[in-house]
Image (cartoon, rainbow over all chains, first blue to last red; front, side):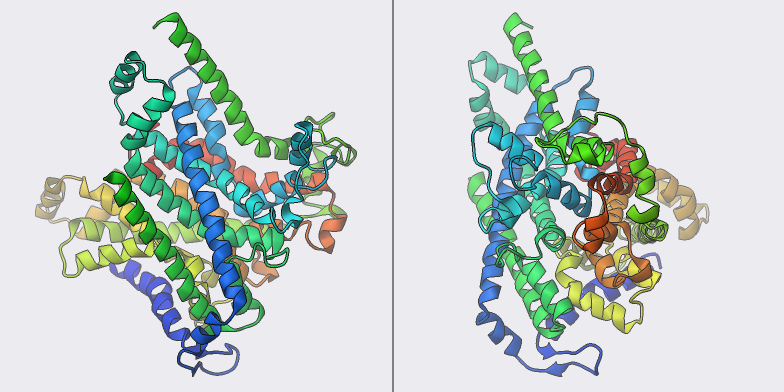
Length: 281
Length: 281
């Protein structure tokens, strides 16, 4: 049977971990020493009284919301900008899409130098200070470390989001926009009344794709650049799970936190669904 | 076209090019810095154009005191990427064919399961996936590195299912009447016809696998199975980073990213089709 190999692998490494993770969350387990011990809801009790958990949830939500929302609007703007035909359009579009080839790890290394603090050191601080603004301390600052990670992740998420929007834009007939332009509708009104409603289904998809990539990216960048510092300001839930599981060896507790993580992402997807339903009406 | 619209069109193209350069600037800076001398990199204010080209940075990344990249890690990344993607491709094409064209009980359920798995990336089931792999005694082995990732078949299976559903039913009926087995149909008919879908699938999966950081981090706890994303993650943060000159670090990032930039440029169209499931170029 053709499906069998796929399904077996999928069951062992995807379904089993999801169900096993649920069971594991009711146990404590020192993996090197015997079998898990059933502790009921103890991990969940502990979770509710662990202040770092709530800080991590808030950090995760901030990281995702302040990343996904800009991604949506910037990507739509970029897609509108490059939805135009001219001779070198393919080459110019490549400039927009090429960051998709970068890993979070590689980006982390490059951006670490871009974010380097002090106007004489990092490129970004130099540019900012040229505008007469004092640049923040980026990765070392409690306020700016998380936005800094957001900036990197937005940058990495833009190519896919822009591609998706470009596909949606190309389904809006040119004649519609031309007619609107003849009626004297400026760019702002065209975007509001024709483009935004025209791509709203894609907006939902872009939001989902971005949400998932921010969930993934939050680990790579945090582990490489900040380790959750300064003072837990960048400790996302994913990272806290990793620390509990692989630094402290609390596998049961980490599994319970993973259930919370799935609930958080599920909740965001649900919120997105409700929100997009409201927008449609 | 009137003069004023031609004028706005020109402005729009100029803006599109400038914005594209800004978006690509971290990568352009990475390439520039990889060719600078270390003296130039430490000059204040920061420079962006190499005053002379230091190609030796690239060989320094592989050899001597400044070595960042072990050939073994490079080989590991190649083995991991080809192994995971190759195996996953086989699972996805066969599984996609089964779900698209064969009739069996539970087909709807299986399809739904694959769809749901898209929203539960491996990062959220990291702990139990690690335990499954550990209990199979596969930690620190190539199969342990490859199998759990190859098993993430949700996206690929659904992609191929979507594509194969559009293949005419008569084609399969005719082949069946001629006495062809499903295996023959698979090899002679499906694989050649699904080439565009395969290209789209490969474009996305190869990038994902090469750039993956979290799973290799836990499945190959350092040691000899380390892949390139781990190499990059360690550079500059440890004692090793203090002796590694910045320009060599940048050269290393370019070396690690270059294969994916080449892949991306070669299959950009397929990448876009894979994301959008459409004919957008």
